[in-house]
Image (cartoon, rainbow, N blue to C red; front, side):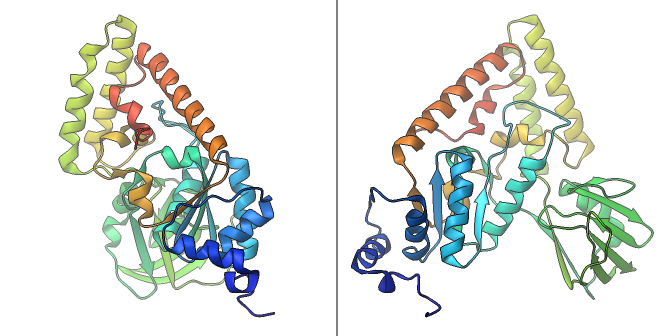
Length: 337
């Protein structure tokens, strides 16, 4: 069997015609196909970046597996964050970290992306920041902790979860968002001496690495020039809350956010501010030039209607309680866009 067996020229004239239409950018619809055949079509007829959109996360996961089986290359499954409206200082970051890991792989050139419609309508960072640690190369060791905090990492006594780091003398333990396991990094002054990944569960040392990319543990990047505008927006909107309890709650949120902005670094709940930031973009900007495949358009349209309706209703309810500001509604991209 040839290595490129699952290519249109080996699969018949209908596949070749479909592939040609897609290369030309011709809007195309295909009907009456099973899930495995959808996976084969997506894997074989698309040569450039492809974004496969399903109506729900379960279908997206199933189609990612189908496409990967035929494509023989990396397929990135992009998930949605589990909360975008509420300001929460302490919130589970599992969904966020999975999303960041997927975005990191996309940023590094992954061609085949599968997602559900909810993950598509949430905001994206224009670009994820990262810190590269490379054996034999120098970094500013004295400023390392501050740099990691600016990337959204939390300093702890011992590393127990993704997004954490510990510094003891000239040894850094860190569990990067984009890695399956944590790593211990030995320094000699500013020089990276050794990078030693280890099994998170057993502590067993794994094969030594020469490079470790520490991907940002947040989708937020707040510039110094943006902070005054954010504070002005928060406090300037307080007068729009007419109910006393709502006003007090909104004032508390504005005060907490302002204090955390003043202290520098990022913090839990910073994604609340994403619609105000220059670094926030929609999916088209983040993905760049791509072919979009919509699996069951009617189901996707119905799910989008339901998502936006629920988003609007939750926003209005939370607004009455002083939990959200007007910009929070823009955590979902504009429906017309």
